[in-house]
Image 1 (tube, rainbow, N blue to C red):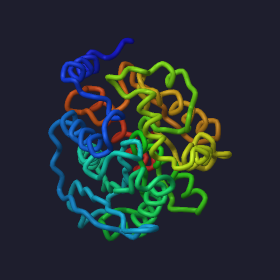
Image 2: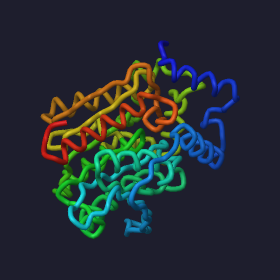
Image 3: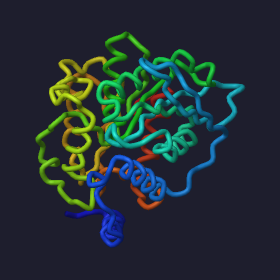
Length: 316
């Protein structure tokens, strides 16, 4: 294993500190530990012009959203990015992606809205998908009220958030909208029980591994047969044509690497404009570690550049 030296140092620190795998903890402990780790590794968060919270109508209950505005918008409406946080559909909240959302809001610049979808196992599939879909529809309909441009709307997410972003694009295509300028999928889950080389190889208990993946799936799916649903496993969709242009980011030492890259290939084969980027030496979760990993900052810059170009009507 040729981990990047910064990742190797992070791994050694985890072992030295005796940090247990999240899947060995109770749900409450895992949720607290996950947020604490992300906030510590994310470094100092960037200031933005304005941050405010709202609750929007959902399929069963109101959905919390958080809006990041990088600048005053009296003169010009900003493009809009809807962001779904990671955490295996089990962990996370709008706080989880705070650092990422602030960075992207400033760097693009754009209005960023993160969605506080319901978590499993309290609310298993399809609750998170429905929440993300309904929130995206509401954001598209009310973008102008928020200072955004409904004609320049993209979705993004990391890990389970990438899975949800992909599911939202499938639903938007089915419903004939909202129109999406782009999708950014950062090491997304795309196939339940995917039997890939990267899934078999990544078994290091000090890092996100195949046991982590199985633990999340076991909480997300009340019925394992739901794993065949394309809204759970986007790779299994019968048709990927007509989906928005995509940037797909993967990490070399990540059990989800191969299924993310397979999804990028499937999109490309279906005529979707795809940019696929693997970060060598990196592990799952690196995207949110801008405080300790140079490649995290590089990936954030890549995402910002991609979105800026797409919002301007160009290629990725």
